[in-house]
Image (cartoon, rainbow, N blue to C red; front, side, top):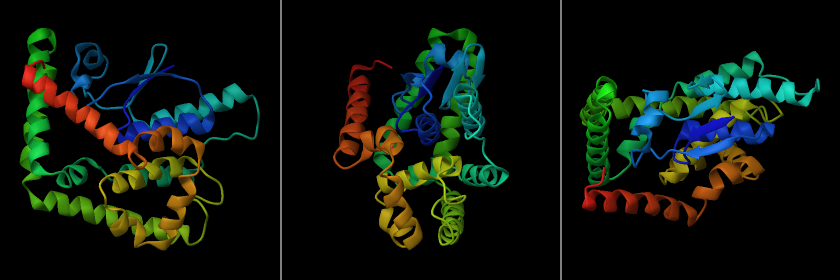
Length: 267
């Protein structure tokens, strides 16, 4: 089994948390979207959306995050041969879908300084154009990604989009806060795949220095956040890259790569 992912990708974090929680071995391939690695022809042929993660088991390839997690659950059941490992209940799946409905893309981008947004966006557009020239048979698909990149820049200029994303997030967190007043975890007293879906959302808020506004202001979520950070899966999947000084190392490494490639015009 192979997983194409990256620590920056929120959905990648979700799938990796599921794999770690279920104890499933897999081969890891880092594909950094900020440096345009997801636009390389080999990956693009497999997944023209260029989105992460991608899970492959033989000829079976899955792109949807929730489908991957449910597939991982089924693998865990088959591998264990035990009856005590069960797949997600309808309540858990409902929470998973509800959390998945909030898209982090524009919310994240509006909290990044504009000069960095534009610099990386320009770099990615150049990467797409370079890959298009190298693989003319994929020109149509690459053109779609180029168009999408321009549309993203236009949408960022529309304050209503970021406002809607923020309001959506607030509603979701308020609902989570209410639920955590009744149970230790999101779907009951046991850790489930619903928590796997939620943890990266909280981690993203911390990464953007928004912890006090969105987590600290909600006591149940704040307590929950402390609890889930103690899990080995969190420490391996997220903490390893973003706790404390590590986040600066992770981000600076990528920023340095983008700057050097830009200066050398190697896209």
